[in-house]
Image (tube, rainbow, N blue to C red; front, top):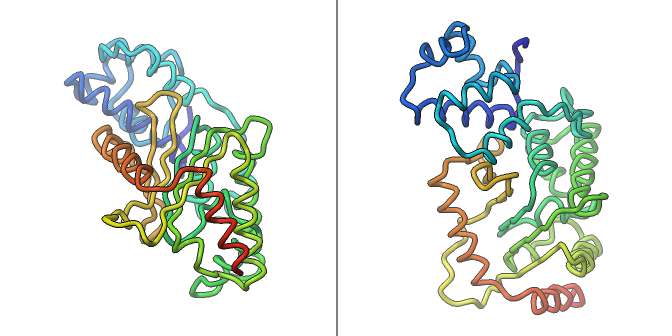
Length: 283
């Protein structure tokens, strides 16, 4: 297989997992290469995501690494052999790579859980809300790029409204609901949209109100994407230069615990729907 100039986050995840398996087996890259009859450079390329790996080679490596979790290995094979040309590829070369990586992650996720404190989660945003968010960027985006970002964000809604929607749960702080990133009519429309979405059986929206006592979780914003197997779960957090994808087992466990704590602090879905509806009427 040829080398890639810029592997996607999904391809990098496969590379990381193969390296973890080799490390757990206590083998060097040179020893792993000998198992396949290749040189260590090829192993390094596979483990850095710049080269792919065939199903046959992946399974040979897994067997020699004494990796016995068949479901996990099958999931890695699915990534290695995936030839999906998703809708996000239309934006390659036009939008920053993290936009595409996030869309690809959502496409392959089995569930999504989000916690947000200052903004409405991306998949729940209206077009006017998204446009207001992108318009505030400094330096200002050229009109064409701004509209590309808005269109990309709207297309991400396929995970909620497409032919195969996935379970989605959002925990949103009251601050995000009250901050008017656009004008009053657009803010009212955004809140009404949230109420309408929360009626769908696969979408849960929960609110953390201002008057909740003892809540110190305002740094807990995240997107938790369920993988095809739990070992392939991923957390996405905002970083200074784009999104940070987190996938170590220890960190995933910590974020699962953190989500449960934030969820436990929120209103249930019915009370949250009433809460948002009331805020919309106030505008």
